[in-house]
Length: 442
Image (cartoon, rainbow, N blue to C red; front, side, top):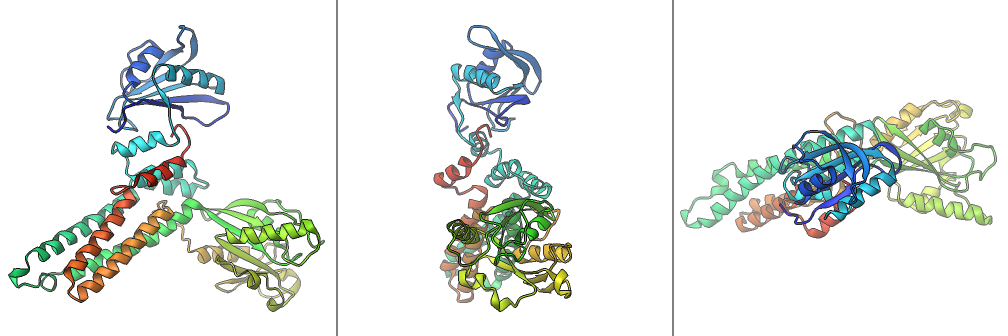
């Protein structure tokens, strides 16, 4: 048990609702429960109680649930007071808990205690937030798979194989006088190659998980009057943007959200990119360029009636994000609809022709493949896997040159990077960064 104090917070969302929950965790939980309810609560048994203030006045009436350590979410004694969902009532109940020795919980502190007390590993703890923030059914399912340990089990499997390699390697180094080349006499090289392949496969799957967890931001750019706003409306299925024949109608960025085969997508319409002396339009163009810098992918909309060479905002700005060229207004040119190559699609925002092909092309552009086995992941997971993969590559090179000591060190580095994913190796500042993004009460 890592905690010495008792924390409390409102665990339900701000605002009014039918039910509101005050959550308590820590060593004083049992005494707080008895004082505020007037009852000795049985573990894991729901009881109807009055929640009383210090003067004995009933603050609220609801269900009290007590979970005895270690069989609780945090691994500590936990109390949930489930009352009416009014913010004033909840604040009164919470204030009473704080009077009785509780402390206001920090963001994510309940989940952090669950991690510190060994109830969850770090990927599972992060999945709690991913589940709360899920923007699509597929994302919620992926977060639940991570919370259930799907990602952790894959990391742990590789971790165990890597540990066996380390033990063998360091053992071989410790007995050089035996005049036996343990590395060549064993299948060490094959086992190392197997671990490298598994890390590569897991990296590919984790990349899918990161896309699913973070969602995708698409930014529409192009010259005025090429149909960007119409493309936005057609992609999102909403009339979010005003569409007129007048160039320069869009002055500010405008966004809409939709799902792309389970992938949460935010698409941003921007002002037409052109030279202007109108200060409002100039600011709109500046905002468009800033939106491009933060995009996951860019949709460059051009008029199919014009040559590509004559429309070059993409060349002038050279964004780092992947780019899809969308040739709009095929209803006027009467040309073939659909994909011309991996990065070019011909559509009609007016009729909707070509948009099914555009959606498939966008998935390919960002490397998204929907699948029932996908789990959520984060950028730090990918960074750790990349670092582990690099160390394993170096270990394979050292093995080829017979440098046993260097191989052992590279395996140790790779092992530490994998351990950081699930929290076996965690710096305090990393934990602070992760849990600070949680809401209070989680």
